[in-house]
Length: 457
Picture 1 (cartoon, one colour):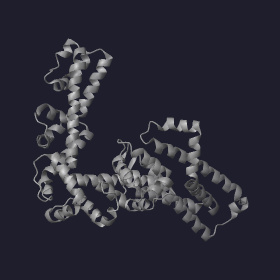
Picture 2: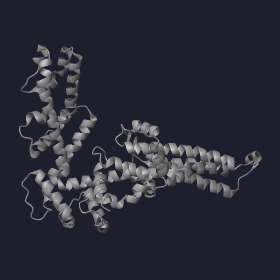
Picture 3: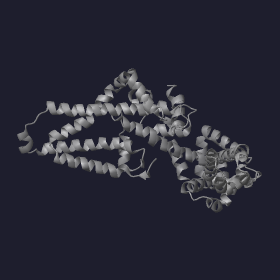
Picture 4: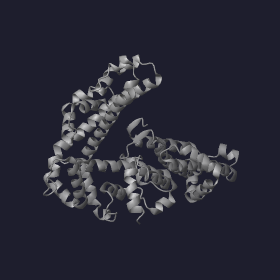
């Protein structure tokens, strides 16, 4: 769970750099040298030796079994396993280097106390402090990511992302699982606005909610109803079972004594409350086609959001209705960008045709968009600009690779190729986790890229 939805990480980077510079100023070069070597050198050692260390530890059955037990419950278990081993190795090398530094490089107590550092020594110490601050900021960005959503477009953070490298493997992993995925969904949103895919996706999700309502009706009638007391049964109208259940659930819970039955009732009630905004449409509409359903939500928006006090449910529904409104307003204009296409008013057919046309005639579509659309969408405009600027490079990707995937990978600060998978074990573990896990947030981006691009080259 993230506590901040958008955080300016530049502030933390600046504070880290200032803190490290101050420490360097008050440190002697001897102490700052130890601090820098202890912090940086483990990355270098692991850059060359981690593959061998990981393979060796994997062969030790009790270590491997122990780590598997810890990580198997995580959706990205391979990545977590590699992270645990990497951090453990890093800490071991950190303390070993610090210890060896104290043994090998000795300075007399008298010199430590009375010696006055030269200006050159102070300057070197400060530069080492800046370098330490850079590395600490890079690692902290990765560690903070699960709890704060970092704004990746601020100047200093963008510089950090541009300098992501294999030496500090967390930096490349951060780019792959955050920056790239964020860009991918932004491109998908823009394409979805144009083709109608986003509106269709939201419509289908509502139909899935209606399927949940249907299952709940069957459950109440077939499992719950005959287990209720006569008093509770009298409160339910089997011709309008969900509506009567919702209105009388509190009284039914008071009437019933069976704990297992009450748990089932609470679970059903919880599911209804979670989807309460959609219940009126399910109960009142005879036809669930796209136009009827979306018009109902647009026209009755104020009434429907009054059904719940949950800000999250209201926010999600508001965004969904906004998608329907935008598509309703722009549909005819966007469909007119396809030469000689006559829509039959079936959204599924429109979307499929549009996506096919976009894949094979994108230049024509861009030209028509430029000439016909007066108020241009910034997201769509950015998408087309990125395509034009990278057109030659994009042609080197597999033909069947989705446009949004190509645009992300052609501009990525971490170029994902076979060599990268061999060299950066964190990246390799993450990719192996997501490409076969449809529930992973990175699946849509990396699954096709891995199968159509990496495995064919």
